[in-house]
Image (tube, helix red, strand yellow):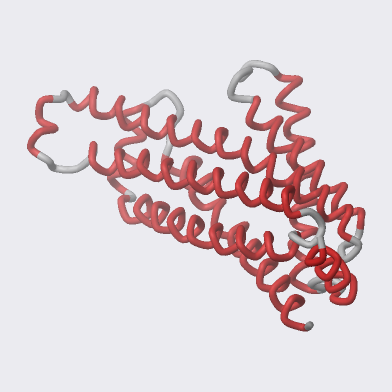
Length: 239
């Protein structure tokens, strides 16, 4: 069944595409437009780069749509191992995607606050700028929240990959490390002044990204062991 190999390769391509697009709004835009602690300068940067900020919203929307497709494909690939755990992985990633979708409203709120609506004249410029920075900080916090669900997704996927027989076991171990990386990074919002936690989080997150990328490239290049997948799928259909 070559179709399942092509399905796996499609998953790899889409996950890689997400990995290329997502950092634009998560890393690039904040580093380019946000001046920490300076609401006025931040608002000025966004007004001067309005098109760039709007592009970030478009990219976020595209990523959300791609995530929905990835969720379905990964469920199909991993269902023969354990349906219940495959559903856990799917729902965890779906929860992450929903948080990402809600988080887009924070970006839209920034555009509204910097717009020309007449009702905004009741606010002083300094108040509007402070609200803009508040919404941007909420957007950053939203990233930490969806990473918790992403961590649950990867630990479930990692275990399924480890037990599958049609993926290398080392990939499963690496993906479970990926879970720890995202989880530790999320905890950073609770203890922002902890230098030790920040170092551990950075190391685990880097290792996690390596694991995630390795799995993505394996899907894209190798796909799955079709014979082993068919055996597992047949056994799953009989139970």
